[in-house]
Length: 143
Ligand SMILES: [Zn+2]
Image (cartoon, rainbow, N blue to C red):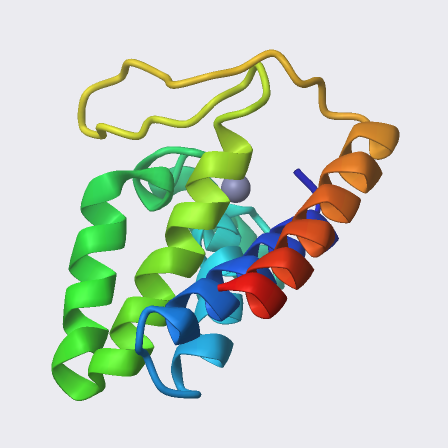
């Protein structure tokens, strides 16, 4: 999935977290959580890229339930609202990435991938983003 699709998922997660009782801190935490798992992508300067490539496989540990639980629990101790938002944001990322054939190692360290059939193409990402924004509006208005 592309960045903007994950952010749309984070907006939906943020609205859901606020509807579940998290304060306003849940919203930016959900947006942050929706893009956090892709911190395993080899970006940045050469040394950083090398280290990330050597240590982290894309869609490995940062795309697992274990990562979501540990990171969210750590934040939860500082702020319950931010912890809830972060958990829902990461969950939205994992759900979206599991929709395409590459899938995610949801139960890392087990190597089994959870995967779907939606191909990684710009038109699919635009449709998903539109659907997520529509869902966000429905949840915001009706729940
Ligand atoms: Zn990802």
